[in-house]
Image (cartoon, rainbow, N blue to C red):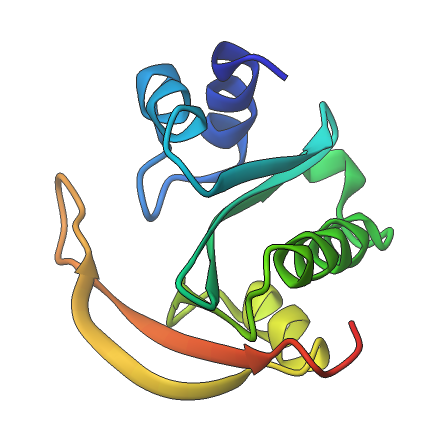
Length: 140
């Protein structure tokens, strides 16, 4: 997928936190340790450094949700992260994003923290983020 394709899908998936631009995706693709998995239906962008892997964003087109695609993409993320030598994966999810939180918990993530006001919003109060972590020795 091109950065433009990724930004278009991201805009269909997110209003809070705000969607990312094509420039942001292009910049990430040039960052050492970063990787993208998926296709036009959905993707995950991650980064692996110093024994940890971070999920930077996960976007699944609305018409493909609840079909197992997010789980499959995340399992690919875990496999790729293990291949880099990462021992743990972590991510931040908006506190009110129940569907995503349930997915991550079902994949073996546990809450290890909370970041107050982490997701900045242009026209309303910032959203808190839950910090989730998973040992990559666990399946999924």
